[in-house]
Length: 209
Image (cartoon, rainbow, N blue to C red; front, top):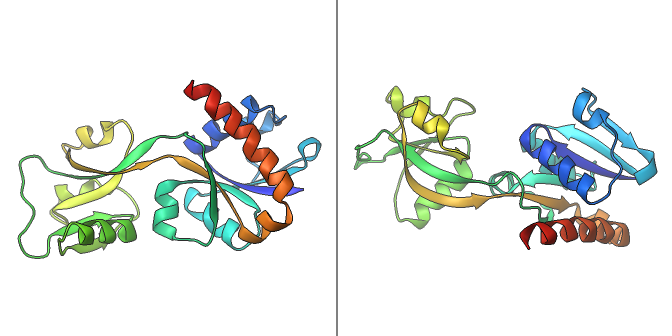
């Protein structure tokens, strides 16, 4: 039985839909229950439902063979896992945003984000020295209360920025969810894992036609 770590929320719902389209027989309790571990004996699969930021950790440490994680999490966490396929679900992007018609401070502008690693690398590549302020929630507050000149955050529809009076200044990185695997699991269960990849890839290709 293979173990797959799945993130709760939007990615989970879209991933389950994708797996159903690939003819995985998943129980209805996937969408209704509150269990954190769900076994599907007929598919020889066990699912761990986790916070999106924890999925890659479970896969890296081998408690899950496979996982579904956003590219943003993979870039930020830098875990030792392999990316097998871009599932093309939960599409969004990382962006730099702030109050409209404002310039960043000329001396060590402050950037608030829950992606300190990504933000640091991005501004370094731009040749800009910035001070990164790590936050875990309500990132949009930072420019409004004078904590930061800009924020780096995930943008899906842009509605949250608009509702908080912020504008997007730079689009950074496109983000979709990826199927990832533990390197040791990939060697041990390569045939089974490739079968899963092939079934999911076939659905993705059909959608793109």
